[in-house]
Image 1 (cartoon, one colour):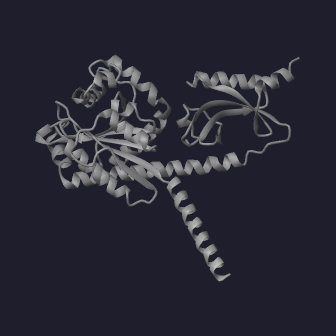
Image 2 (cartoon, one colour):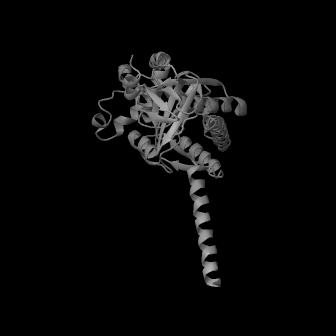
Length: 359
């Protein structure tokens, strides 16, 4: 009896340990840090500095800070001076099912420009943004079979960028949100010149399936700023500033989740109640139900089926109103959205409902 009880206690302890261990893993945010360039690709060499070395040191410093937080799982695309294809960098992030991708770089310009800026994937607003993307994208010429790998993408042709934007559209709002936290941190913590959040066509961001930001930490071509970024202090400042922004970004997401989890659990369903909702998106990631994540739409909800999250816009018991809601969702950019009917809180055949209620 004593042995059996002892065995049961040990078994219970093991099961509890595994439960809490797995639960802890599931609550972790995976962040992929991408130091730009490397190996045979030095990046820009303003004032004799090497972008690849500075980006790596800032990235490693950032990871070291974030690794102290048990809520983060940190992965690097490189931890030493080696050449990594742009496509491979994105693949590392996708394979790890990352929650955030941060690519770190240093800028260059023919003028005495200075300041830090953040970029998300998008169409160029001006020639300057195109030139920055062109510089970062030109690394593909160092890769084998780049024409086949990138479907004929030409870094020198602005029209090639249009195809880049479509794949990241689902995560654009979240990427902008993360970029804003980083940019605000540069200004608030380091008093850096605010070069704002911009959109441009970076290949390294195209193939990632999560919120993704490219950070230009400053200009090596500016003598004072280049010296600062090449120093231990400058690199430490940048690492801490980006880490602070990442903390605030995920804290914001966590707060958002608390809000909408309470909201969805308190969704009261009456007996024999029919409710029409517009399904606007689905995916494997839990996205906070904030309007900026869904092109300005409000009155959002979600359901989870296995590992798939389904996102809905509005709810009404009136079918004609549901059609109006559908048309509005499509106008806002959710072209593949459609009406879903719920009866007593469970999905119900819309065709069956319409045939039963034909007059």
